[in-house]
Length: 165
Image (cartoon, rainbow, N blue to C red):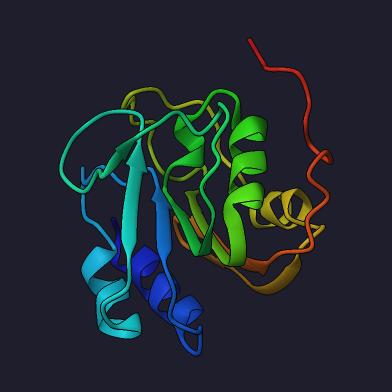
């Protein structure tokens, strides 16, 4: 995880009421926000969710399928580009969020990294459109990424479109 992503997460969590955290795409491949979250929020229940077992993963689950857990704080960092059916994943994020949702994605300047696949790049404008139905509190672009902090108010059927194949 790049220093810019960690900086965005730190800034986005400032002033957030501590609560349980769900992190989607939590397998620690190149860094984890878990210690940063603990430093900012204190010891809170933290569940790392990923498609595969590995460091940082507490729950193996596919976020494009039915997912029934909810949390006051939901993170999805540098993950959406790896999910072919990103619309279903975004619906899961919206359904799982009871308080604050923080999402970061790389921009087109980042080379493709097939881990496990690499399908998409999202712009600042695209993230704003995807989460238009929430209350956007922070939307930033840096050299190689974009991040959004949004609170619920979501229209859960808004982007429930067919799977792209």
